[in-house]
Length: 328
Length: 107
Image (cartoon, rainbow over all chains, first blue to last red; front, side, top):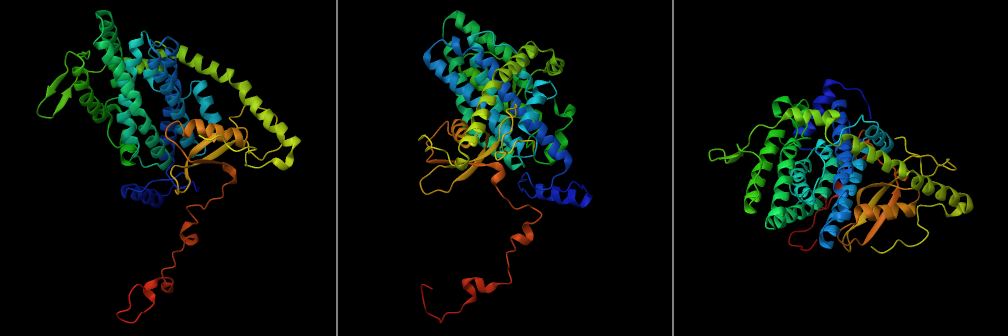
């Protein structure tokens, strides 16, 4: 790709975007567009991977087999979503190693929501319903973004994410019609997860540094505040239907705009957690690094096996597997 | 890309994320294989297994291909205009160029 960024090239690029064209990895793109997409896709991939940790915490303690298989499948999906997104980011020429190094040495960010602890089983319900519900809103829009590999990864993810949301809501709804202790537990979980979920959409539009360019380049199709409002409007009736209270005394329906107006989000908390001072930042990063280290021998063994196979039977080297692939 | 090439011989076992393979799936009988993404794997067989785990967790697939990413040769956007010259001046490549007597059908 020619790196020269002349005004003509920029104008031609902006015209392609304005015409609704999809940008592919080898197409010319302004450095800012490439940098923003790499930042978003790698952050998004890291979030999927780190997001497995709070939920993985409860797999062995799921209350029933039905809950356990659901949660296992969900956590496995999150791993898959991380892989779709790393693959999309790699199309811009950054290697998987570079992205993982950036995560492990703390240079890259991931969604601040995953720095909160999962204190009770009800948290698993709240995460599925609220956190994944917020992710569905965000990802449905990203599936229409202007960068082809990101949009395609999002399409795959959206197809799978609805199951996550519904399994979470089922957990919350079940606990909400349970014993007094179960009702208290699930209300406590929703109280703790509601505000961090609203923060997932990012800072208010007036303070969002990247929003203007991202909207113009059609990477983002709706502003942070618009997405947040959309999510609140979807969620309030779902909470009402099962007698769950959202922890916002100012929450009120505004008939004129048709929106549920919420109280003020504590953005200081958001910035504090993003800076690394959330309840679980250190624990999450330590768990991630440990998982990477503990997987090292598997990667090395796979490479050693392949290297030895090459020296033993050089004629066999081909992309054809030695046996038929298992029927899936 | 700093990936080790799948064809590179006798690379000492380091800790790269392993070579990259592109994944293609066939979803319906009679449909063409379609690119869905990529996976890292030490060899083609492992790439098939990883591709199954990542891209075939739901719904039946009929077939899965993996291809070492560096084995794919592709056009570049810069070359496209002349490479894919649509040759609009070669009107004799289209049926409308040829005349048929009036009243003749199914031609």
